[in-house]
Structures are given as structure tokens and as C-alpha cells.
Length: 103
Picture (tube, rainbow, N blue to C red):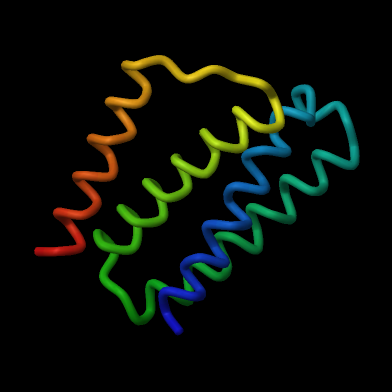
């Protein structure tokens, strides 16, 4: 259940971050409201996850999975490209997260 809630938190973080680009510096009302609501839900759920899971494990997972999903969202919705260095960086982030979760 804890990891399901963590995935919910990650999902809202990815949604909020993806909408952030559409806010145009918080000048577009609907994307701004969507971003703020998404971040609120994300952090609210994350705070409950942290009652049951260690901070380092939770944050490493939240950050790395969120980073990968935001990268994918950027490619799909904003047609952003991914360089070889970016891919290497993502591999390193995932590797570090696996190490933190394993040990």
C-alpha cells in the first residue's frame, strides 16, 4: 500500500511538473491551478508515505521515477529530444536509486 501511495504521489508530481510549462510563468490560469493542485496532492500523499517508509528511500524513488516520467512526458507532449548524455544521466540516477533501495 505504501508503494501504491508513493506512485500516486509521483503521478501528481509528474502532472504538476508537466503542466508547469503550460503556465507560462503562472500567467495562464487553468494550467497554474492544475499545477498548484497537483503539487498539493503530491506533497500531501508523500507526507503520508513518509510516516511509513524511510525518507532516503522514499525521496530517492520519488525523485528518480518522477525524473524519468517527466523526461518521457517532455518527449511525448513537448517534442523534446534526449541526448546520449541525458540517457547516461538517467541510467546513473536509476542505478543510484536501485542501490539505495537494495541496501
